[in-house]
Image 1 (spheres, rainbow, N blue to C red):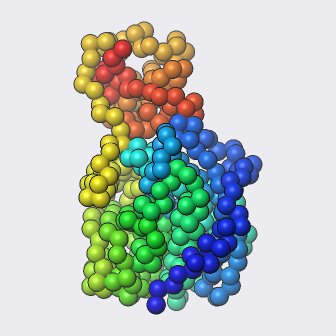
Image 2 (cartoon, one colour; image 1 turned 90 degrees about the vertical axis):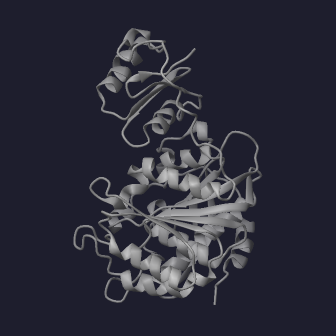
Image 3 (cartoon, rainbow, N blue to C red; image 1 turned 60 degrees about the vertical axis):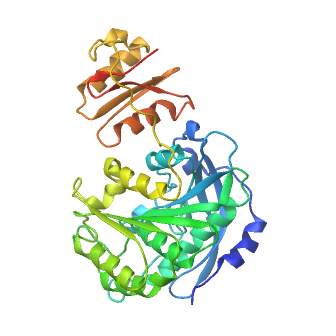
Length: 387
């Protein structure tokens, strides 16, 4: 039977639906002014695999497009740190680079830092599976998805969010969380994207082999028919947490169980494809674009890249319309960086990026901290600036 704890959470959220200032650890993080970044704290009630239930407040980082909205929403979920020391690091999750893409698509993005991570680390770990000897996957899946559902309920109090149109997405255990949220069918859920979802991996001791592979396969097969929203599953061949075969087995089990999910396994990227969500945007963005377009979300996340202009040659440093210090320090570094690359400028600011998602990152670096609007000056070996 599908559990529906959000009926209790609605009452709990009614008590504390107010934004508060981030704690010192969160305030030390950068703030994306152009994405109107906010931090809220909301109450959640979660239960671990031993039946212990606790209430906590979790930080939720919110990014939004310009304007009043209301906008559809993406709840974006983080993975699980590989050690308790990393889980305890005082911080909150932001995923600014990926959030920038979804805000560009017209979504509010909400990134919860779930119970047991960062500033909420206090020894209570509702996402423990009990270890590799006899892992239990459903309790941790329910605890994590309870918090997603709480965020979605909280969003109903925000005037700039249309909580009748929301999507759940996540990486690693955040992908596991995404699958669990999908099979529970909370109100307003339109779709789900699972980035390298799973649990039980150890890239050092057991590279490419999850100790929970069989349990995930059994659980997802038993719950698949309950999911109604369309799903997209994205994995990478060189994932050192799960390997190449387990995700295929999980997807097969999901389909055999009566579920539907579009599955893509992308070529190897970097040293560990498990990080593809962060380091392979050039590959996954077109797939997510196409998936969202099926639901009518066709807004481009980035402005089109202009063609070459006759403003200047790429190495004419003195013609770059920024201050002398920026030209000498930042633009010379851009010229020395490998392709692909991009350089953006705006009123009082500039930024450049090289490698994956270079255009989006360059614009973000330029405008994020000042809340300004930037335009591309150069892409690869071409100046594209027009006055």
